[in-house]
Amino acid sequence: MRATLPSASAVSAIVLFTSCAGYRMHKAEEAYNLMAYEKAHHRFDKILRHSVDRNTLIHCADACRRQNELPQAVKHYHRADSIAPLTGEDAFRYGQVLMGVGDEHRAEDLFLRVLNESPEDEASLDLFGSCQGYREFYSDSGRFTVNQLKLPGLRSVFSAVPWKKGVLVTGEKETHRGRANPWNGGSFLDLYYCEKKTMVTWLDAIPLPGMVNGAYHEGPAVFSPDGGSLYFTRSNYYRQQLNKDDANTSHLKLFRAQRDSLGDWGDIHEFAYNGETFSVGHPALSSDGHTLYFASDREGGFGGSDIWRCFDSGSGWSEPTNLGPVVNTSGNELFPVINEGALYFSSTAHDNMGGLDIFETHEEGGQWSDPSNMHSPINTPHDDFSFIVDKSLDITGSAALSGYLSSDRDSLDHVYTFWAIAPTFFVDGIVTDDEHRFLPNTEVSLTEMLTAEDTTVMTGPDGHFRFPLKPNTDYVVKAQHPNVIAQSHPASTKGLTRSDTLQVDFALTTIDLDQPIAINNILYDYDEWDIREDAARELDKLARIFKDNPQMSFELGAHTDSRGGDNYNLVLSDARAYSAVNYLIQQGVDPDRIAAMGFGESLLINKCKNGVRCTEEDHQANRRTEFKVTGINLASRP
Image (cartoon, rainbow, N blue to C red; front, side, top):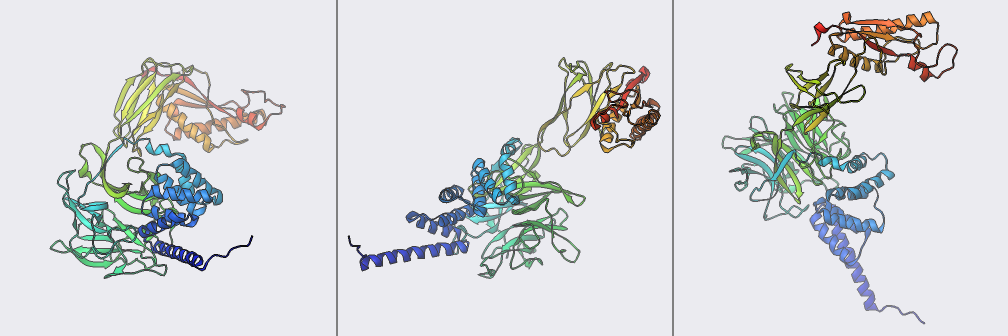
């Protein structure tokens, strides 16, 4: 059969269709490259209605992701992944949006896929670990109450800063005229003041008076401690012209404005360390106004945006310094806030629920503590940021922490109030004897270290006791009973921010005069009598026992293995016993109540006598230390 060539009209139709499809793709990619993601999303969507292409699906998914349209992003990533498995950055982003919709199990598989390709990928490693321990984020979700604020006149709003009778916020108007933000099709961001009538009733948002708001983005911002200066983020533009770098990217800059006698903001000056090829923004100030924190993707960071700071030198701000790898990661760190000595910031990395999570860290001696995730309900799988403390929001009168946070957990950015009821703490325990039997009627005391105040209870039939504890306090818990050796253990609520019950159990040893009691792990190296580091830890515990029982006298005995001459071993064991006793005296044990005794190899506990071949472990067991109660002075019983 003879093949038939297509007609000229058919060829023209094919060429026209191909040309139109190519033009539509060109316009979609152009919008995407210009970061006009709302427009790019719709153009990619139209193309996908007629033909399915993996790269188009990936671009469409990313355009949805950047507009926080996560369910749509998941759908497109899933289709692209079914054509051919996503890898690298695409797989990582797919994992991020899966976390954003609460599907941490599928997200875990995506991050593992990235790690199989690039085991050194720190961001994927962080989020893979977060997926594995996801339940921990909800372990104390009742600690905070979080409610959305309804601020009239704003479509989306974030970064609330207490000011006058309300808050200064960064917002997007519900309706807009003129030019639109190409990223999402809405208006550009401006700074607004919202006045509070009640916690649920707020007046319409009004633009910040003066010269701060302009043609493009302004905000977020922070006031100086005296209220006379405003540090704010702004798009890099001059008059109506947006400035862009060689990659067609417009970056953010930091500015300072001054308030005049009429309350208007003007006299605007640019921050000395802005740049044309990187962004600087999200300012925060220390309580004294002498340290300026900000977010930037400038050179010298650890990847993405990092938190930096400058110090007031008296004649200007010092060169920016990076807060270092404890705070900053290969992900993005943004929205620093200084609240009562703590640094709160948001990150896409660390131990993360998804999106941006809020973290807390403290600086001590120039070192930052490991950032602590604030957990649910402060954090969600979405973006959570701008954690601002405001004690005036404590409507309960008992909140340990209250203020504002921002989140897009309901699709758009909104401001939320939060307050935390002070956490409750207890110490709980069981007292038993050396036969593992419950010890009823045992006196257990709780001593607050700062005030030396004591509280005492008696254990019940099950040997149980329980005390309430104060926050941020050190304690000692002590158990004592007739005919047993009293014990004490430290307990502390310092650093605890969530309600908790500390477990402190006691296994009390029955007093049997002149019967040796082995001390675990007080061992010596061969032919040595110096106190090893592991032995020092055990001797510290023994010192506490001796001091807990001031009515008792003790003998501390040291033993050697069988290697070496009998007389030499006797001298060596004496040296070990005196070495241990001297250590105990240095820890505060009364020297009149403790004696040292060396037994050499006369009391071996296994078969390893002279001439018997033994392992080093067997010999080590003989190089032991024991103590025994040698007397009880009833007159000095506490």
